[in-house]
Structures are given as C-alpha cells and as structure tokens.
Image (cartoon, rainbow, N blue to C red; front, side, top):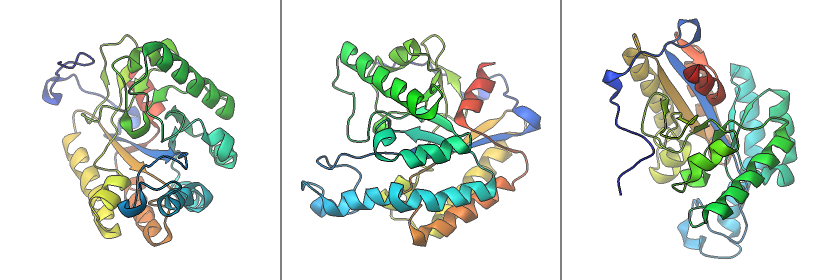
Length: 283
C-alpha cells in the first residue's frame, strides 16, 4: 500500500522557515535514555551471544549507559550549554530515577519513547496500542512533571494508527519518519514530523558501520556545514542522536565533546530542543 501519513513536498518548493534570532540551523541533541529487558535480544556489540538468556555480555554493555555513560555525557552537555531532548522509555522512571532527576534540574525536553526498548507495538490491535501509549505517556508525565509533546518509537517503530492515537493523547509531533531536513505536517490533524536521523546516530556510526571517533567528529562537522550552506533563505534542522552506552564510553567521549564544541560555536545555530522546533514551526 502507498503511504497515506504524508504527501510528497520537495524542499525546493516550500515556503521558507525562519528560526528565532535569524538562526539558519536549528540543532537539537536527541539523548536516548532507555531500559532493556534482560530476557530479550536487542542492540548488540557481539552477535555471538545475542540469542542467550541472560546475555550478560550485551545486556551489560547496554547497561553501562545509565550506570556510567550518562553521567559522563551530562558534564559535557552542561559545559556546552545544550539542553537534551530526551527520548525516554517510561520504565526508566522505575529503574533509573536519578537520571530523570538530573534532567528535571536542567529543564530538558521529554519525549515518549515507548515503555522500554524491548517492546514494540507493531503487532498490537488499536485498543491494545491505545492502552499501551496511554500508560507510557501518563507515566512519563508523572515522572517528569510535564506531559510529553513528542514521540519516537523504540527502534523508530509505529503502526498505521500510532500518530492518530498520539494526537488523541495531546502529543503534537513524531520523530520516526527520518525523511527530511525540516518539520512538516502529517495528514493527521495537529501532528507534525520533526527531523531525526538514522545516519547522524552513534548506533549506526559506531556499531553498524564500525567508524572511529575522528570519523564521528568529521561527520558532525560536514553535516552542519552543508545544512548551513543550504539554509541562507530557508532554515534547516540538524538532529544528533546519541546513546549513553555508546558515546558515553570513556574512549569515545572526547569526540562527543569535540563535535559539540564545533556545533555550539558555529555561527547561525539555534541550540534548542525538538519541542521548541515543533512549537516554532507550528506557530
């Protein structure tokens, strides 16, 4: 079947977007804060044990994020004045509440990112998904003190009903359809798509493609430079997707610092959150 959620609209045919303060590129950092179930396989650094229960090697690798990596990254975000857009599994409220405390102290943006990164709603009925999404959104609201405006599915998964069900719950945008450098309206009343990236994402860069820290810094620089060059008359969005168990590793962390230093000191960049991007575009 053909996609009905959005229509074709080439970027060269659109009315221009103007970001606050005359900025040309709106930058946000999507910080994935996730919980994984110990008896289900997921993102792995070594596939040889990924089928085992428990899979101590890969589960422990992922669990390094909330225990250590997140706190290393926190210092770097503070140093560069970057408020995270947190892609939050609602189970983090139960398992890693200190992380939520740290984000609340910094006025971060909170997006719903499913219950955990081991459950996808792809096979749910509409009623099952409605109940699931309601539980996720209300739990995050209780945990953070604010109702989320945005959604990104675990592994960017949706059903054909997800955007409409999210709109019922008062959400206004999704990140799952990574097909643009600008926000755009979905064919669901009140819902936007905001850019996210599977290319500018530390899972793909380091785990899937096996690139190095210097590669990562160059990719970030090249992405920003190209978007800036294209944005003289029409603003762009740059999303950087990071995971504490990957870029929070000690040997990689300095490259995140170098990349963010370049972004934070680049002219014409609005350091913001995905919430603020969506709200500005909608207005």
